[in-house]
Length: 416
Ligand code: SF4
Image 1: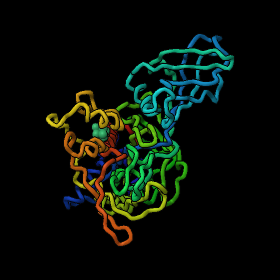
Image 2: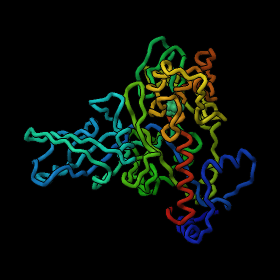
Image 3: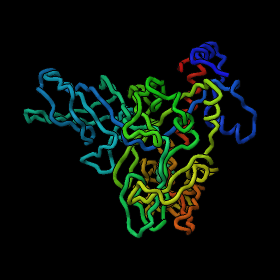
Image 4: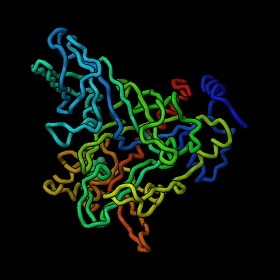
């Protein structure tokens, strides 16, 4: 049996389409409910995690036409931006490219990801411009001053990720852990939303291609094509959407052992066109391998686990235990929180929290508690058990954006 995209869009327009999130499909399989190809028209998939390939293209008016010839350098809240490619000669405005991974020259804990979130949340942004005739301009802007803002992700929504451990006795600064990673076998960090991930649900890659409509950080966007470094074994996507339509809840900065990074959230609808596609979306976390690599070398897996072992039935957010709170001890934990979600009084700002688990690890599961699990694996015939200490993907945001996409389709506001 088959159906076409046109048939599905017609059903959507008539309010007759059967739309499920990937999570609903997986739960129905686990509950041994009988869902068949006839019952499912579209499945909405989602992922959220650190996506270093994120960049934004801005056009911002900063002063009167004629005030300067051309910008040489620009900084937004201290985050370096690349002026151009259009010089906007004598126009008093800037075209800028800003990397989500760029670090502020004024605050080593602030970077592009935090900046993008601040812009979307309507915060005031300080822009410093150095012009080619050696003059300087300083201006405060808000999102209202951005004529255009577009995000391009050069490599996003990777199908396969890697977990990392440090088997040696040193400390490694890396973007693959929220803090410098201590050895030996002290911490376990991983990325990926497993069975919710878009490409993971379309192994044949027949549905997600150039022109596929998506949600990127809450805004309607498009797949441009394959991402950089994408391969048959490790596919990823190049995506784009209008940043001014995005919501700050879905993207932001994430501090790591090697400085601030950026996270994004993506949802992609999968039209269930035939039985083969329907079979593909039945993949479960237990069937998705997660290689475990040495954080020193990064590429060579030492062992492996699967996504059932890392997401399982664990908690998604920590609990703050006020009776254990000690302001002095908490200072380091607060500083280490990758998304700055811990308030002065120790409480957690759940809108900012990523559920990474670092506060739980650093407070030895007392001030902040969460069942986050541990992973057993073998290396050279020896078994190790290492606590999961940093999740660099957020299953809650992945779920939320997949549900948002389902709701938009159901309302007829998003066509496949
Ligand atoms: S789990 Fe803890 S450390 Fe991680 S983002 Fe939430 S409050 Fe911060």
